[in-house]
Length: 396
Image (cartoon, rainbow, N blue to C red; front, side, top):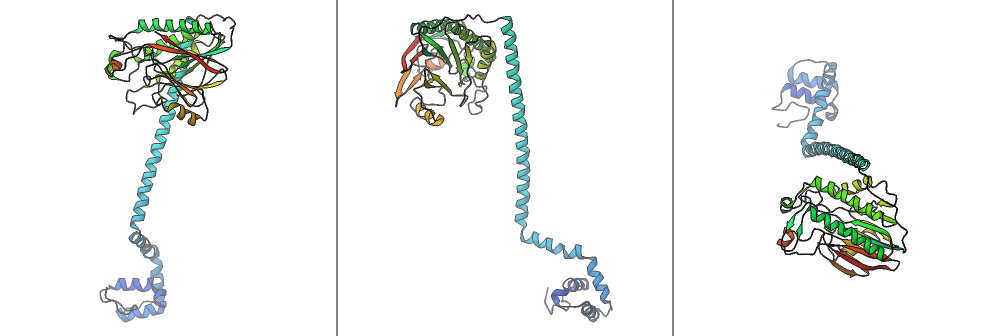
């Protein structure tokens, strides 16, 4: 638009545009309504009263007076508005996702609790139909305490090679020998209190394709069998020792999915074992199923006045586990017990004994193929007020 005097009609300005500009910018141009009426007459020869122009502006304030303000904001801040719209949409979807995940979490917890309740209910029914034999033990002649390590039973797998033969029948034979030797060594040392550490991988599970091929039973059947066997073993111990405590952690073979990257620690078939044992042995007064105070995958036990840790070992290195768990838990143990590595190993790190338990299943095809041959065995540790005084390697 070519600019002349602001009170005059511009060369390319229509009469309506001129009238709108005068009435909307009256104060800015320093005009009165009479001045506008006179200017309009000078340009058009048409006489309009002062009131005409005053009323004219009142009819258009919401359309014209406010519209330039909105347009100006859009013209000057388009990115800000667009960004706010995008951010709003993002927030809306985030809230929706959070609500969906929260509902899923509640649903999973409900299923988890329901599953636990149904398992306990079923086991109690079995306990009524087939109660475990238990008799009150004799008073111990000593006051020592012992830890028996259960790990890497891998029930369900079948192996038949030059180094080892293992199947469900052999499993039961080895467990029977383990129980017999534990009681024998316990009586020999005058053990009053026996601590049983379940360090995980009691079942073969679904970890590797080769393992699934070798499994003679599905994972649910595996868990049912080992849970019943564990209950029978602990009932037998409770008939021989004045006090028995059972502890349990998860392994890696008992997770619910084969892919470790998709696995969630809290989703494990291993959790069924302590539930089962608790329900199955609830009538035995000197048997206690312990809960893990610090972490579901870390046992912290008081053995003859000394702190002893237990963990499966799939998340730890033997050379670092003593330091890492001590720093994590802010506790100083005299020993850390582990499974997972399938061989006999013990070493002291700055006053802390790291004790690796062998496997009960022995060398399978997977271990043979990676050249890791080991003897089937489990361990029993004897403690007194001075600390750990000996280790029994129970060959099976």
